[in-house]
Length: 112
Image: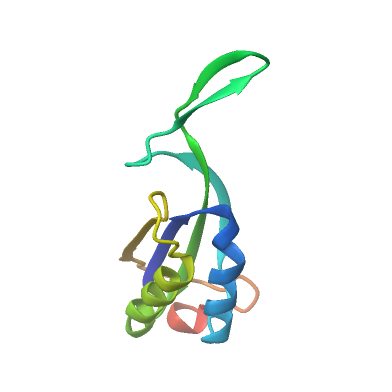
């Protein structure tokens, strides 16, 4: 199994969710996060004072999938989240040792 984790812009979450549901991926975890990369941050004006925003708001999506679907899911997320602008985000894929469905006790791919 693989865990596919993507950090992307807020307004792309619904597009990504629709793409994954359309492909039969039925579960995901969504978390609001802050961070920076090449986008770095920006300066804002608040009540007449300038201040630097170093961590930008993003959304982290985590999807557990069987090994054979990982590449497909990465492609779906990448195409649905892409705007072509800096700050589109990143996708990370890492191994998932075990999954257990609490209600039934199913393990492995059956728990997904």
